[in-house]
Amino acid sequence: MNNRNIPKKILDWYDNNKRELPWRNNISKKQRQYFTLVSEFMLQQTQVKTVIPYFNNFINKIPNLKKLANVSEVKIMKCWEGLGYYSRARNLKKTAKKIISDFNGDLPGTIEELKTLPGIGDYTSRAIMAIAFNKPIIPLDGNVERVVKRIFYLKNKKEINKGNLINKKSFFGKSNRSSDYAQAIMEIGALICKPTNPLCFECPISKNCQSFKKNDFELKYRNSFNKVKYFEANIYQNQNKYLLIKNKKFKFLKDLLIFPMKEVEKNKFQSSQNKKINIKISNMDMKIVLNKKNKMIKIKNSFFLDKKNIQDQILPSFTKKIFKSVSNCS
Image (cartoon, rainbow, N blue to C red; front, side):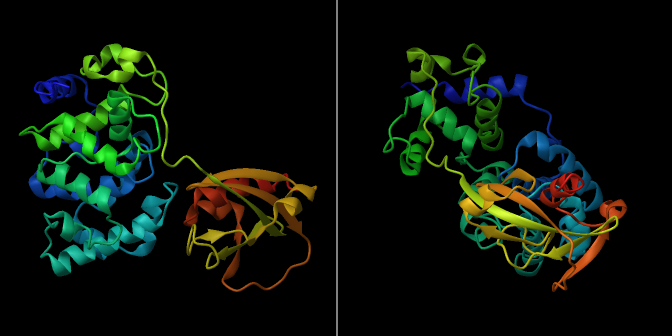
C-alpha cells in the first residue's frame, strides 16, 4: 500500500473534524502534561463521553500535580465517584507523589520511566509520550486496533494478535505533528471506523482500506469474553437504614462500601426465589440475588447508612444500583 500521503490525509481530516475535548485545550506545556496524565488515567476502560464531565470537575477541584499529590483520599475518591475502576484514582495520586519525589515534579519523558509509575503500563506510557511529548508513537488502543484490522482485512487469530497489529501500524508513517497525528488516528476509529456501521464515505483513507473494497466490516476480537459470576447480597435493614461494609474481600471495588455479599454457585443462584439483578463490572457479568435479612448480626467494618445520606458517602455505582433495587426486595 502506498502510504506516502496518509499522514496529510488524516491530519487534514482531523483539523476539520476533531472533537473539542477539554484536555486538548490550548494550554501550557506543564498543563498539557498534567491534563494528559489525568485524562489518560480516566480513559482507561472508559469512553470519552463519560470521561468529559468527570475530567472537567476533577481539574476544577484538583488543578495541578502538586495539589493532586497532597489531596485527601476522600476528596479524590469523591471526584472519581461513579467513574468506576477506583484503583485508577488511588494510582493517580501515588503517581503524582512519585513524580514530585523522584522526577522533581516533571512528568518523565521516556516510556521506561513512565512505566515505573503506579497505574501506567505499556499503552498509557505510549499515549503520554505521543500526546504530551509529541513523540512519533501511535498507541494501540481499541480505536487504532479497529482501523488497522479493517485497513488490512485481518480476520484470523494469527492476524489479529497484538504483535502483528503493532507491526501493521507502520502503514501510518510519521508526521512532525506527532501528538495531533496519534490523536487523529484514534479519532478516526472513534468517529468514523466505528464497531458497527462505519462511515466509510467520510473516511480520509477509505481508498486504502481492504475491508471497504470487500464491503466486509465484521471484526474479530482478541478478548471478547466476559466472565459470568453469581453472588448473594445480604440486605440488613433497620427502618430506612441499610448495613454496608468496607470491602476487604473482593478484588473489585477494594476498600469501597458495598452490601455484605458472597460468591455462590450457579444452581444456588437459580434456585433462589428472591429478587435478582444483573450488574456488569470490568470484564465480569455479575448476577446477584438480593436476600433480605430480618436478623441483625455484627459484621466487621460495617455501619448503617440512612438512604437520605447516600450523597454524603463515597459510594460506587455498583452499590447505588443495589440501593435502588432493595426497596422492592422480597
